[in-house]
Each structure stands twice: as C-alpha cells, then as structure tokens.
Amino acid sequence: MRYVLRRLGFYAIAFWVSITLNFMLPRLMPGDPVSRMLTQSGARLEPDQVEQLRRLFGLDQRPVVEQYVSYVASIFRGEMGVSISRFPTPVSEVISSQIGWTMLLGLTALVVAAVLGTVLGALAAWRRGSILDSALPPVLVFVGSFPYFWLAMGALYLFGVTLGWFPLRHAFDVGVVPEWSAPFAANVATHLVLPALTIVLVSVGGWMLGMRNAMIATTSEDYITMAEAKGLRRSRIMVRYAARNALLPSVTSFGMSLGFIVGGALLTEVVFAYPGVGYQLLASVQALDFPLMQGIFLTITAAVLIANFLVDLVYVRLDPRVRVA
Image (cartoon, rainbow, N blue to C red):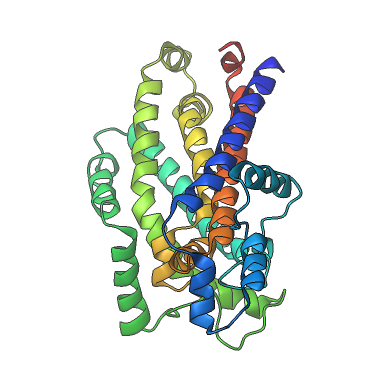
C-alpha cells in the first residue's frame, strides 16, 4: 500500500508539472491567434469585443499568476476552454469527437503488434539458431527502420490507388451515417486496415527483439535448469516459467505505448486523413489554436501518467519484489 501511495504522489507531482508547462509553452510561442482568426474570417470587431475574445481564450492582459490560477481551476472543473479554429465549439467536445478514432486505430495496432511480436520473440528465443531466430528479426528491423509516413504512402499507393483493395482516406465512407450496426463496423474496419498495418509493420520488430532478449536472459536462470532437470514438458517450461517472467519488461512497454496511443500516430493519420487526435493536433498548431493545443497536450500527458500508474499496479501483482524497492 505504501508503494502505491508513493507512486501515486509521484504521478500527482508529474501531472502538476505538466499542467504548468502546458500553461506556459503556448504563451511563449510567437503570433496572435485572435488576430489571425479575425483576419481569416474577415470579421470586424470593436476593441472591447476583441478583448472579450482574448479573455475567453485565456489570452487577455491579466497577470500571468491570475491566468495560471484560473487555468488550473478550470482544468479541475473539466473545462479546457473554447477552440479558436472551431469556434465556438468547446475544446472538450473537439477532443471527445476525435479521441475515439485514435483509440480504435492505436489500440488495434498496439495489440496486434504486441501480441504478434511477443509470440514471435518467445519462439525465436526458445528455438535459437532456427530460421525464425536468424532470418525474421533482421527483416522486421529493416522494415521498422522506415518512417511511418513512408510506409503509409507506399501502402496507400499500392493497396489503395493501384489495386483498389482498400479506401484512400477517412475512417468511413462519405455519406455513411455512424451507427451501431454490422455494415458500419465493416466499413470502418476496411478503412482501418491500411493505417493500422503501417503502424504494426514499423513496431512489431521492436516487440519481437525485446521479448527475444528477455527470454534469452530468462532461459539462463537456475530455475529453468531445475525445471528441465525435473523432466517437465518443454512447452510448459517455455510458457509457465520462461515466458511468464520474460513478459515483465513487455508489460512496462505496453503500458507506456498505451498512454501514447492518445497522441495518435500523427503522420499516419495525416497521410490517411484519419480523423484522430494526432490529425487534429496538426490542424490546431497550424491555426495557432492555443486552447485546443493545450487540451490535446494535457489529454496525452494524463493518458501516459494513468497508463504508467496502472502498469505499476500490475507490476506489483506480477513481481512482488517491487514492493520493497
């Protein structure tokens, strides 16, 4: 219990620091988002109306300390302000409308890559010197060395433009009304294949190498030798003894990756025009939408911290030795 409270306190401090940085960084960026918004829209407002807009977006001339206190209070009330680029939509509504697609894409790709890479890594380490161990890791590392956007554009051209097997953009066909139905789910799945495939291809090699190295270190332990001396089946030794303990580093990696899912695969979402948080983040930066940038950054940070805290809890369950650390 003391370990959990100590970790909780650490993450609370980290969250406060992230709130402070999130408040300061956009204000250090050059440019005036309110003036830019008025210029793009061609609207003519009185000075007092412009000042009200600045106050609404948290960019008025109040002292920084007063703005900071107001910002922190609004965060704990669940209010992130109003989006400048999508005025007058609240930032929370913009993020909530995008985060589901990012979670769908990122979680699908993460689960597939983690499970596939972990299984392949365990098999490669258990059968060292086989074709699986000697040939597959270099190939996957080579593929993983390519940038996301390069594979995304290649997959889009080959399977979308040339062969026409998959759609080219968005999360579902234009004109389709989102609903809970099998036809809509199938339509979403066809749009999901290509962006998820590019993420899996880039990341599966890392999962395989990580699990392979952990398995090799685990198989040299004395308890593995003892299990073999007792005459236990090799399949049982691999699954119950070697793989189970080698999974601990992968659990940490999975938790951190789970938190970063909220940020989305920015370039992949841009290439496929996938309506996720990463795509929206790029649009907010281009529009100097400070409130939306702050909301997205804070959401990403909170997701990473929560995911890591949950991993700490799982780690205590899997390895009780952590409690005394």
